[in-house]
Length: 411
Ligand code: ADP
Ligand code: MG
Image (tube, rainbow, N blue to C red; front, side):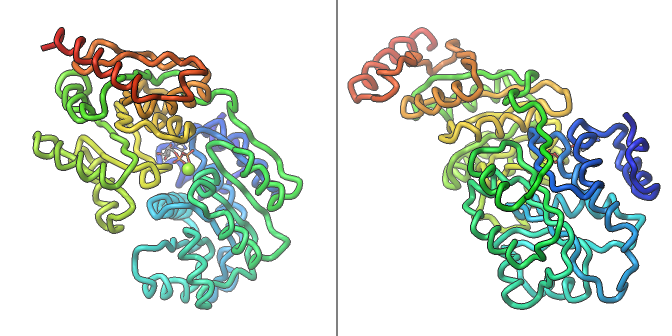
C-alpha cells in the first residue's frame, strides 16, 4: 500500500513524500483510516513502528479544512500529551514537517525552560498543542491555555506516562476539555492500568493492536553476561575495545551512574554524550544531536530520559544495569534493530540483579543467551523457584570464589 491510497489531502501527501516515507507502516495503515473516521482509537505497537505519524497525519487532515477559520484568533483544536520534553520536541518537528503546506500552527510546551516564550506563542493562537503534563497544567492554571474548542485529545506513550506517575494529571487535564471530542491513546504496551484509564477516557474505542504477542523483535541478538558488580566498567571497556562497534546506547539506572560512566569512557578516549533528568534541556538536546550526527559514538542514558526518543541506526545496546521493570528491558533493546536492521543487546547482570533477569525472561518468554567467555565470569544462577526467592550471602560468597577461579584462566 502507498501513502496516496490513504484518503489524505494532496498537500499532506506532498509533505510525507518529502519526508522520504515511501509506504505507510502497518500501524499507520491500520490507525489512520479509523482516526479519519473520527473514532476513538487505542493503538498499541512496538517502539519505532511510526506511531507519531499514525496520529499526526490524520489529525492534520481532520483540521486541514479549518486551517483558515479564525485565522487571527486560533483556538487549540488538537492536544497531544506526551511524557518527556524530548518527545514533545520530536512530535512538534513531525507535525511541522507534515503540515508545512498548510496554515495550521503548532507548538510544544514543556518544563525545564522559561514560561514566557511559551506564553507568547500561545497568545498568538495555535491549532495543535503538544505538551508535557506538568507544564500544561501550569499554563492552564495561569490562564494561558483555552481547551474549550478542543476536538482531538491524544495521549502518546501512555505506558510511560503511567510509569512516570502522570495518570492523575491526565485525568485532571481531561476534565477541562469538552466532553464531546475524539480521544486517541498510543502506547508500546497496554498494561492493565492503561486499559482501566482507556475505559474511562475512551468510549466505544476501536483497538489497533500490532503484534501483541511479539514482545521483542526477532532481529535483535540478546546476550547476557554474569559478573561481579565491581567489574561492570571493566567488562564495558573490554567489549568496547574488542567486540562492539558503531553507535551504542548504554543504559544506566541512575543519574549518578550515567555521570560516572561518562567520565570513565571519556578518560578512555571514547566520544560520549549523555542524558538524564538533571541535565538542562539545551544540554540534553545537544547530546541527542551529537549522537545522531555521530559526533559522539556512545550515548549513556537513564530510561526516562531516553524512552520514546527516535534514534535510529543504533548498532548495540548495553544494559549496564539490569532494569527492575521487565518491560523496560523490552523498550531499551527496541532502540536497536529498528526498521528491519539487525541489532544486538548486551546485558550485564551482577548477583543482586539475578531476579530481574528471571522476570525479563518470563516476559519475553525465552532465556537470554549467556556468554561465559569473558574476563569476569561468575557462575550462572540456577533459575529454580526456590533459589530465586533468596540470594543469600552464602551463595554470593560461593559465586565470587568461583569467579576468582575462572578469572585465573583469563589472566
Ligand atoms: P514510535 O512512536 O512508534 O516509537 P516514531 O513515530 O518515533 O515511532 O517513528 C520511528 C521512526 O520511523 C521515525 O524516524 C520516523 O520518521 C520513521 N517513520 C515513521 N513512519 C515511517 C514510514 N511510513 N516510512 C519510513 N519511516 C517512517
Ligand atoms: Mg512514539
